[in-house]
Image 1 (cartoon, rainbow, N blue to C red):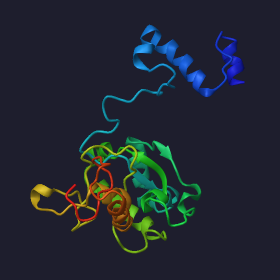
Image 2: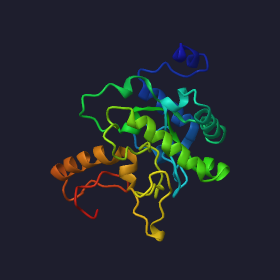
Image 3: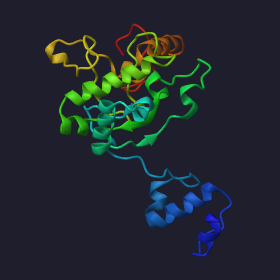
Length: 230
């Protein structure tokens, strides 16, 4: 019905989704289309953004535990209202991702237990002050600890990877509920540990060391080989 409606506007019919994307791209960019996209290539939609979609150097792209969203505890419900009042949940998760695993995936404990993810949390901190960060992180650790992947007592992480910002803030290893300040001598969790958690990240590092020990394929939040300075 979608393509039939387009035909009523003089568009189509299209043999494929790629043809449809090319047609709409040509409508959007006009004569400059051929200068943006190579001939025969299906255009990116939308185009890559020139700036990050999350504010750099902040608490960005966090996972919100499903257990927290479902909680009847008054203080936890108040925390949820604070978060969603200011930030909102960008991606709905949950479902069977919490259980569907053969142990061979890189899905983090905090991602598995999440109900929403990729939340820009810094505006919540700015609005409600630093105590809300500690309350949120405590909730993540509580619900991650109830899952099979997070039950080993190791730091489980709390970030969603796909939209994480450059220089994302991380908590202190001395106190997992506190913002880390390396300038004050704190030992901080790495960005990678804050995504995958300590246990899973260590496993991923061993795999990286085996297949790419020199870090030829690298980016700022990528898994690093074990025992390197990359």
